[in-house]
Image 1 (tube, helix red, strand yellow):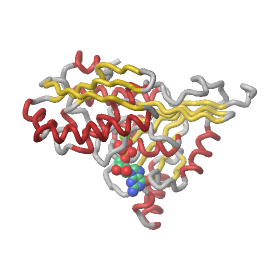
Image 2: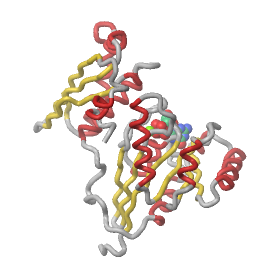
Image 3: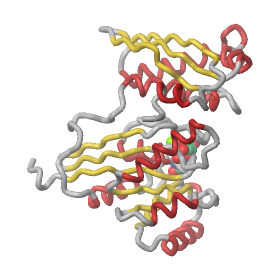
Image 4: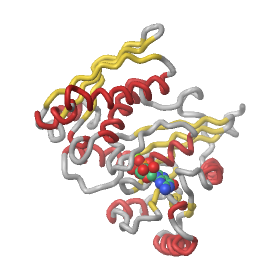
Length: 296
Ligand SMILES: Nc1nc2c(ncn2[C@@H]2O[C@H](COP(=O)(O)OP(=O)(O)O)[C@@H](O)[C@H]2O)c(=O)[nH]1
Ligand SMILES: [Mg+2]
């Protein structure tokens, strides 16, 4: 492999909450790295996913959906978006084709001023008809004449291979940034905390998942088992009671589902213990957020 022929770059995925950014990154990588749920604000961090080919390396960044911050947590999430805008070699701007919500205005202005290639990915093509797809295509080609527009369905893998080929064409010549056997800059411990957070989003409603954070207190890899102690932070005693459920039934159901997914992800048996702690102000306490990895 000659480095002259090698291409590599940072491909950063930006969009409104629920546009399908995480689903798209997983589809482009061919593995589930970033958690996906039907609820907005599932992704709280910038998550890198690396795709290695013989003569290319794509370092994707999945980011939280852009929003106007209501909590310090949101400000931390938007910092992750800002950093993804600043170091991109290519931006994938993901649009939910089935949703008419206008794009976040100030973020759109920032993207328009950038001098890296922009791909507008019209996602969820499976949900709309040809006429709507044409209208959207027209709209975006007028709004951003310099951008390329690619309709896809990340969920059903429609045109995602074609999109990948276009991404590779756009990468600058460069040696790889990370060792070629790496899949992410995140640790297994981080992915396990994300799996537990995904189950919180899946099994609980309304404010509960948003008022929670997961902290992995210990992560011990032994020969045949990985032992994980996880703390779920929540804001109120009443929320703690809901998470536990009648005689512990609710937390047991969630933890079992999380453990099974961790076992599949790590390809190893997992012993998972979960504890719940009430911390009334974690979403607004910058020091707490720092220890949770939101403010660098
Ligand atoms: N029908 C359809 N649903 C999709 C598609 N891509 C993502 N979704 C769904 O949209 C929701 C949000 O997806 P997610 O990747 O978490 O969005 P994010 O917030 O932008 O990261 C989930 O329920 C996904 O299954 C798609 O191409 N078609
Ligand atoms: Mg996401």
